Length: 311
Image 1 (tube, rainbow, N blue to C red):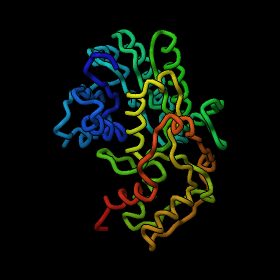
Image 2: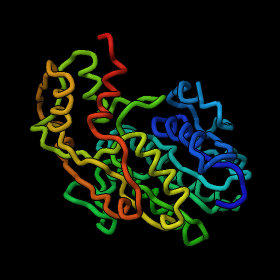
Image 3: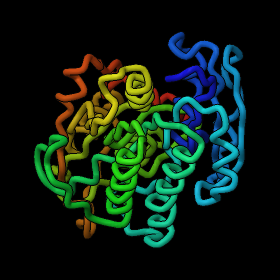
Image 4: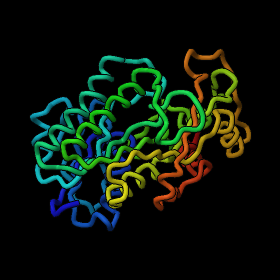
């Protein structure tokens, strides 16, 4: 990073963003930096902006990433952008295809253009491991065959970032697995958190099909750590990096939850049209650069269960 003193986090009030903005404030590598949060608050995650660490210095701009005028204002004095803002669905969802395309694809194009227009060159793009499509086991050089509007839009967003690289952008594209674990702004639509929620409220874990389908995961704090690692490590510039720490099946996630709560039950239901798709991802490249995850699946699931204590 240069001598500018602002890190811009688009989507900073979302699930990943709510953890990242706190970690940036308490990470000594970013001492003296202002964390500027840019978010539309479409999902009303006001909790993400409450009780922030007192050591941090924050700015908040409410705005949409399709609003280029507002984005240009947000880019002033920015040293680096962490681009998280997106319509986030479960990776295989077909909900809201046009809106997903607008925000995830063209919104990323707007972020790239406004960053370069403001002289901001460093950008961390939070992509998704779902861009690979079905199969085992993917590394970064493998081709992408995304299935569903979300995965397709994230793949196209990567293309916008790579085009920006030819114009002077210094990006890192991080293909995150499905995040799970406790954060200030919670999501419960993806498999690990959803199953933990069901156990937490004493309902059966509902698994579609056989449960043998694999879902690549990364804990929310490890996802934040990866993004901060990429901000500080020059070796990550210009790279595409997988960030997946576990590749469990749905059954294996359920088994961990049953170890934590022995009375938890599983109910299998008819196969959803897409949930049979299985994909696993290899993160050896990231690990070879020195990144080390800190949170086990058991610890991550336990902390989600603890939020439902009392049921």
